[in-house]
Amino acid sequence: KELIDAMVVGSGDPSKPRAPDDLGRFGMGLKSASISQCRKLIVIGRKNQQYCGAIWDVDLIKKTGRWTLEVLNKNDINKYLREHEIENFNVGTLVIWDNIDSIQGSNKAELEKDQDEKIANTIDHIELTYHRFLDAGPKDSIKILFNNRVLKAFDPFFTKNSKTHREEAQQVPAGDADGSFIYLTAFTIPHDKFLSADETNKSESNDGLYKNQGFYIYREKRLIMYGGWFGLQRFKEISKLARVMVDVPSSLDSNWVTAVSYTH
Image (cartoon, rainbow, N blue to C red):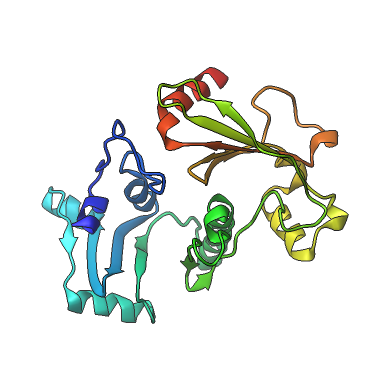
């Protein structure tokens, strides 16, 4: 039931309060993001020692004219696990994109180049967007694998670097009836000569220090927007090491939409 609910398009009611560990809002993300890249979305989960699986197949929907969600049986699930060489899948969620139709190129070399670039960009994006989950410590952290590669957090504040300067977090009342707060934490990250080779490579693959200065907006610890000063100032060489972490709870979603519309 939990998987089928997750596969329903528009399954979330945005007006209902969300738990702090619930990153969803509208029930669209997994489905719309996946179908924009592939013709078939396969999701397999394992919980309480039980497997379950379901498929959205665009070609089947077009053929039948109906939104038919395929529910997998045990044999189907085992077949997909074998095909994709998935082992030791004891708990968690497996997302498979099949019949990918978003790769561009007129020949094999161009197709492979575009695919490699998109995979590299996707890995960089996930390692940044979910860095606070990937690096939350042994008790609370999660593990994400991409094509069997274990992803590592990219911390844009380099908090483990001894040269990073971190200010004490400031608590700002959000002005809503629930008494919610927004938390702002300012960082001055190290000059690139004090960064490790891995930190330098990660920074360069994510547009470099200069373009990444500014605000980092998090909704329940997931990064949703970063870089730039929202019109308060322009990108400057003197502020390229400045970062501000802004933590916004999901209870303020409606306020955030209004704030973004004013900014633009």
